[in-house]
Length: 351
Ligand SMILES: Cc1ncc(COP(=O)(O)O)c(C=O)c1O
View (cartoon, helix red, strand yellow):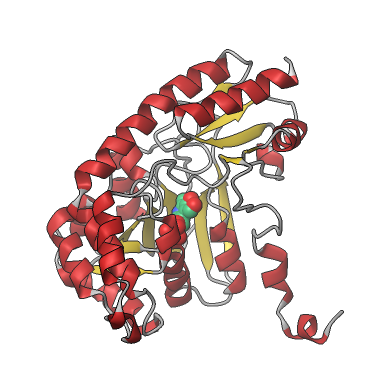
């Protein structure tokens, strides 16, 4: 073991989801494994970033990104001090766990869900409490009773794509003993969102990202909406300059062109319907998805060989090597051409 390995705490190495070689950026692959948007960001975003890529880059960014907070406040009906800008919503999840969780504290969430929650709680030496989803991925009982300092609900959930009725989230917010974090990374592809709960309950944080519906994963921008006192606490522990000048410009311009995002969302929803039907015709069980991906299952059958065979044919999808998901693949909704390539590769595998 090299010296550096002896000083890095083993929990980090054991729990991080990063697998070298599994995030290929080259164009040989049809990349349907990390739920990026297959369509480009608005031309207005690209023009704004190009205009900002000049001499001012020598200057630090605004540490609190007020231009973006003010635009987001207008668009979503909030006050500036109810919004925190993060380096992707991953940073915001990290800040919440660091702010709220001491070693041994319970952090509760329905499972399976976004794997980063496990990683962050593990690093903080909190106690992960998984409350299993039933087969239909409806919100399980027992979440509030599990007594989390933080309770996460991913809405719609990854990897299932399933939504939760807002009324159920409202009831949960009123019963949990700590903070309820509603991670709405994919909510622009769904029919309803939980933002109103932030104004109804003093313990709710709603997270959004520009990585999915706004096609800006490469810019790393997320937003937390929460009551002002909660935002003030998170603000204290963030890095001073946590988002770049160009990221602030890009996200602000993206909010200025909501119609572009909506048009892409509509295309993806149409392709999602088609993909769901085509997968069903190929012996996969697919729950109706409210996100930009679908979970395709063959109950009782390991899909790891299908994942590997698709990869060898140039199509990357996501396989989770955990017992609850070994019969499943999570497939990002790409363009229609990418969907055709996926279906052709599946047909090439045979029944
Ligand atoms: C459920 C969920 N939350 C948060 C994120 C992180 O998004 P970001 O790119 O904003 O860090 C992802 C990314 O895949 C996600 O799936």
